[in-house]
Image (cartoon, rainbow, N blue to C red; front, side):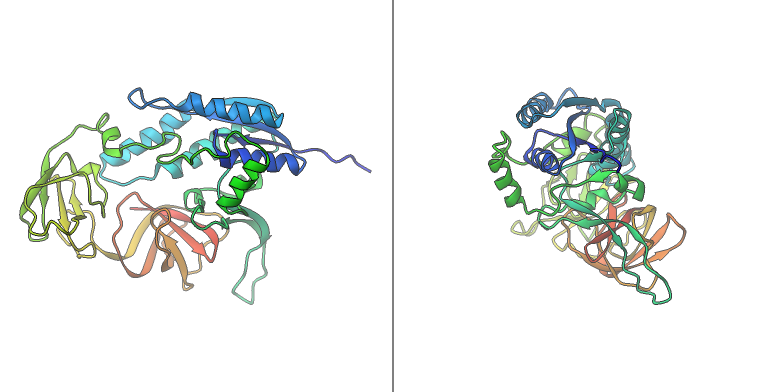
Amino acid sequence: MGKNIIKTVFVGVSGGVDSSVAAALLIEQGYNVVGVFIRTWSPDFIKCTWKEERRDAMRVCSYLGIPFLECDAEEAYKKGVADYMIEEYKKGNTPNPDVMCNREVKFGFFWQFAKKHGAHFIATGHYTKNNYEYYPVYDSTKSGIKKFMLRKGIDTSKDQSYFLWTLTQDDLEHTLFPIGHLEKIEVRKLAKKYRLVTAVKKDSQGVCFLGPLDMKDFLKHYIKTNTGDVIDEDGKVIGSHDGAVFFTLGERHGFTVFKNDDNSKPLYIISKNINNNTIKVSHKLDLVERSIGSIGELHTTVQCYNANWITSIPEKDRKYTAQIRYHGELLKCKVDRVSHTNIEVIFDKDILIDKGQSVVIYDGDICLGGCVVG
């Protein structure tokens, strides 16, 4: 009888409670666990916190009695996440750096690092599930196929499947999500049970690895400001801003208004014209805007590109749900495929969406994949 081989898992330990508990659970499950701190790029003008995070990650690994390694992903992060984000904003788009961070760094560069050093799997503290099971088939003439399914995490307030729509079957084959079946409160309890130093540490917020930051302040170090007009729905100039490229549809902060007939109601950006460097605002977020050259009218049909399907290509006439923002409303929709990567998403109601945003498609709690608004 052959001897069972103990599988090696490289866990991305960030210095936070989620990845710490993920490592502890994998040890309990009998894996050979190695903790890896992924070091990324950060600009000089942002307060450096990665050394403190690395210290906490090292302390967790030392307490758990597992090896600690450092993965230098600075170049991969700078090119694949930061530079991408800046270039997209220059075009007037609204990119999602967390999606690219997962694609380029955590499930790209980190996996290559782990594989090179003998790992069978990588694991992260994402609140999502990776199940190997039969995908439900709705056509009685077809048989089901067993595949890896990316499912929403049990804790809906923490579910992170939205950021993972670029993953593939190959990625999921060597990826573990040890805490996806747990509520956040349970993760905290386990951290206390294991006596981890991160048990009461606050959750990190903001952009992947960069933490909390004012996006406009960050971008102004790379994109020149350009004063433009804020106009109302009648076309009257009521304020000013530092550049239309810095704004996202639906925002209500960051611009100056010197004439507002009703100060008690917030003003939302309902469109932006990059060529004219103007943004149009209204008290009514659902106002239809159809100015020539403007980005941002209400849509029921959205053209998308760079589609990636994790489990199955959506069926043309079947109803699905979609998210256009992290923890955003689940919107009923259909998907019409123009080509394998270019699709139309047809929503049941008008939505306000910006170029560059991710549209993530779900079949129940299964994340089928997603695309980018073009």
